[in-house]
Length: 113
Ligand SMILES: [Zn+2]
Image (cartoon, rainbow, N blue to C red; front, side, top):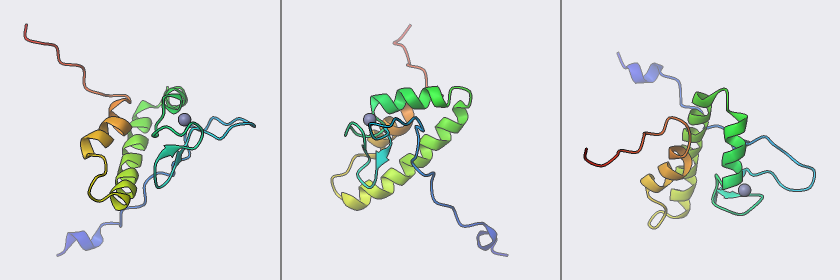
């Protein structure tokens, strides 16, 4: 029996529409694909403002924020490695950028006791 034939096809990652905070006058701090720059401030997404907004928006559902960020890292890897197959950011750089700043990061290891 081939189990893999019974597994569902993985769905696409989350739609990058958060933080959901909007104003009438400026674009939201959401990523522009496929380059993953903030559409409001032009910084690599998630920019400082989007991190603040995401932390506030997901304050009571931090596991959901981690899942969202990990899903977007996966999406960004597909976009950025397709655009820059040889000189794109490293997986470690993308992990730090998308996931490591969020909740459940590992505590800083102190020096020898
Ligand atoms: Zn921004």
